[in-house]
Image (cartoon, rainbow, N blue to C red; front, top):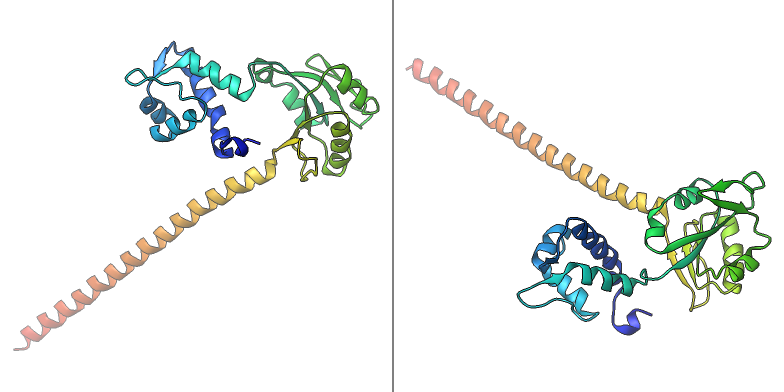
Length: 248
């Protein structure tokens, strides 16, 4: 949908970072900032920042830069976090409870209205004032509490079935932590958060750094060994020349 407006996913992915950095600037009491200074903080080029923001109107003034509060509020509207989004968590294990306990979601307008699980031992427990319910009345709860977003933090064996149910109940946005790619209608948005895949990407980068360090160490050791051989050869040649000179 964003591509239809000419806005790439990469641009959308950077907006939360802009929002976070601008929030930090507001906490510091800053009223305005240039794209150059913002680029130094974010490690993104000033040209990239201007291009990204120009998709939505620009916001900056030549010679003045950006009004921090205005830009922060504008990005909030673009991201849709200037309004309340009712959210439920399906899967009340460790991950689901960790999400429920994260108070910053509420500051961003994401209100956790309910938690659900299929495990009888979890049903009835209360997490930050939210009671964990069974999934039998899931559809009714979605309708009665005007739920817009569902977070799936349950095993992949159950994820597809639950996803089908919430979509039929009218849900258009799924935050998917289950290790499965969901098949949903085109008008339903799925944001996949596969923690193991993220850790694998980190592992790749760490391994690459380690392998490069090993290669450098091997090259350096090889250079040192070659230099030692050259010195030894030169020393032997010197001794030979000295002996030859002594024999004359």
